[in-house]
Image (tube, rainbow, N blue to C red; front, side):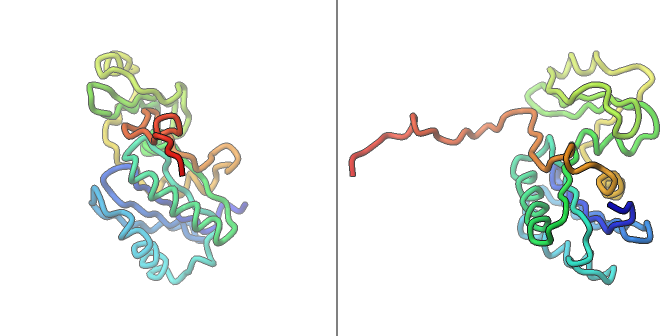
Length: 203
C-alpha cells in the first residue's frame, strides 16, 4: 500500500466523535464533536461532510483506521461497526489501533499511559516512543499503576487521541497485525444471557 493512500480515521472510544482524513498530498483534516453519546446518529453525517469539504468520496478511500479501546463500550461498537462497514463496502483494509497506542503517538519520547478506568482502577501501558510499546496494556489498581509510572517518561492521562496522528499511523500499519477488534481490557458489565440461564419452555 502506498503511504499516500487516502486514509479515514475514526475514534469513538472517548466522549468525542473524532474523524481524521489523511490526503494523498500528506495533509490531514479533522472533524471533532464533543459528545458523550449520540455517536451513531452523527458519525456518517460527519464523515460525509469531511469527505465533501476535501472534494473526495468514499470511492477515493484507500483504507480505514479505527481506535479499538479501551473506552466506552457503546462508543467502540459504533466506531468499529462504521469502519468495518466502510471497509467491506469499498473492499479496502480496515486497521485497528489500540487507544493506548494511539495516545502514545502524541509524545516524541518515552511515555507512560495511565487512564482512569474508575472503580479505583487504571488502564496502564508504557512506551519507548510513539507506538513502541514496552509493556502490554493492562488494568491495574490505581495505586499500583501510579507506583509503576516509569521515571523519565511523559505521563499521559487524557483519553483524547490526536486523530490526525492516528490516521498517519494507521496508513502505514499492517492490517494483519492491527485487527479491528475491540480492546476492552475490562470485561463488559452487562453479560449476555447464555442458553443455560434461559428457561426452556415446551412449544
